[in-house]
Length: 215
Image (cartoon, rainbow, N blue to C red; front, side, top):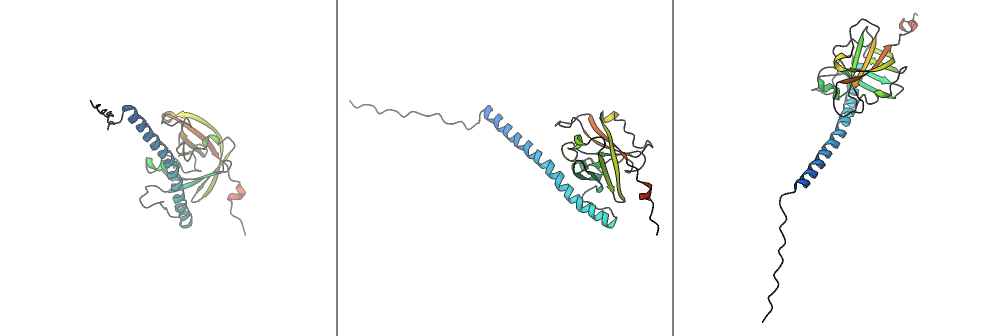
């Protein structure tokens, strides 16, 4: 009697549906990639904007007329902030919308003009344009260059305050000061109510430098 041929072993068909564990892993991978891409995109966006604003700023200094960095921008460069000790130079923009903070430090609308009596407030993000603010110390000099010329301020100190009780009175009639403001803690990744403020006072210009020379 002939032996019966062995029957082939049937292998289970692979499931067309991924397991929950695989889906979770894939979701985490995609989320990580998106976060990494965003982390690279934001600083790159800030750097490109500074290049475009440098061109607009040069045009403003040449012509004296307001120049926007790109045609649809609702803001324009208004001052150059220089920090010699930290070897940093940044163009600040007018406070036209909340989006302007993505492109540079913003001179807040309620501020006085830098150099006028009171406080000129410049605000910027802690992870881009003011990522070095922790290194600015008392005694450091900050130069604020406007279209009508530069002014120098000396850092006097810093403080941490709540945004809604900051104590900053822009039109207090006091000595000319600037306040550099960013979010606190400086290394945090999520928004919060606290702000880090660096204060600086105007360095008086020598009388001889402010008087016109006589022939």
